[in-house]
Length: 142
Image (cartoon, rainbow, N blue to C red; front, side, top):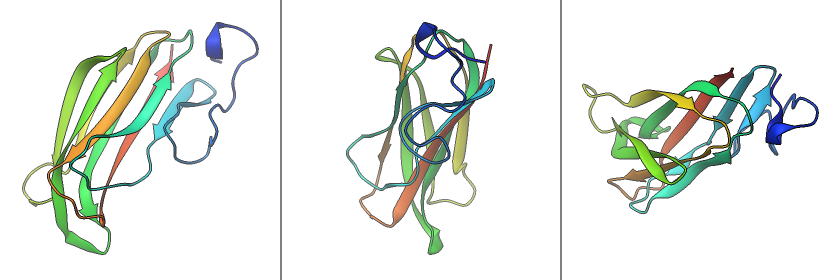
């Protein structure tokens, strides 16, 4: 079981909302996850995940789901998700909610070292508030 912050008892479920969405990392046994929840289309970058890991090494996957309209699946926007570790860009994912023949979900495998500050920021080509995107991180602790 992971030790958050490098000491103390194992963290069974961390963060402020262990069963739902938010910007923080949550722990359950030897697994961890962060679910951004939906963010509206905006041409200004938005931080959707923002957390610092503890003393554990995490092998995981970051997934970016394109800006789409729940009420009208044919409507959407192009977008990017920039992943940073300790202020350095390590990956930029692009997903397209406009075209049916292009990826509308992108994922990137990650190895997250101990005590790493990780952020995921999304940006899009549109400004339609009904177009929403999500970012998910799931991982296993080693």
